[in-house]
Amino acid sequence: SDAAGFADPLEALASVDTEIYYLPEYYYWDLETARAVGCPFGGTLAFGPRDGYLYLSIGEAAWEPNAVDLDLPLGKILRIDVADPDRRIDGNVAAGHPNVWSWGLRNPFRMSFDRASGDLYIADVGWGDREEIDLVAAGQPGQDFGWPTREGLLCRGGGMACGAQGVPPVI
Image (tube, rainbow, N blue to C red; front, top):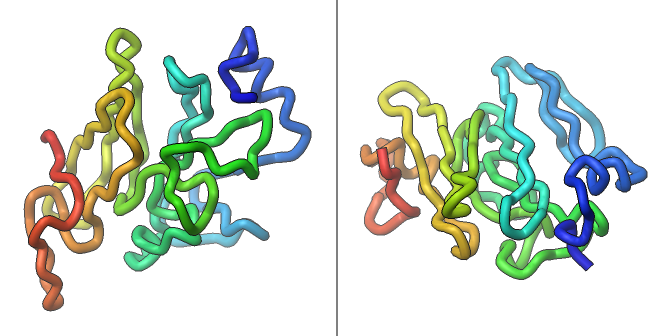
């Protein structure tokens, strides 16, 4: 079964009898408890227009390695089957946290689906030099967007080589 089997996305969300993720401003979800951090890491909750899954964007909690650690939900976009939140959906990462769909994001504070095409646009806040808009075309699996190796199209210092690290932003 999948979330698309519900007539109304709110019905699907209400059917979940446990809290999946709660992200008030200045807090993030660490799988066990909410811990205060010094930066806002708001996100977006949205149901995919074609698959009916719940998509949730989460910042990396001011710790760059979180964005590439596939065992953590931080610095990621999660894709969740609200009828079975622990299920690993086809197209999510093969190993690590079962809800991780896209990763390598610093603070994906806003995202929006194009209702006509199903494409997903992601607004990701940069560290200090670049902001970016990322795109996942409808039907594509989740992707690595390159943070912390890259900020926008800029290669970051610290000896990291950008190379082909992550999908470049569209803006």
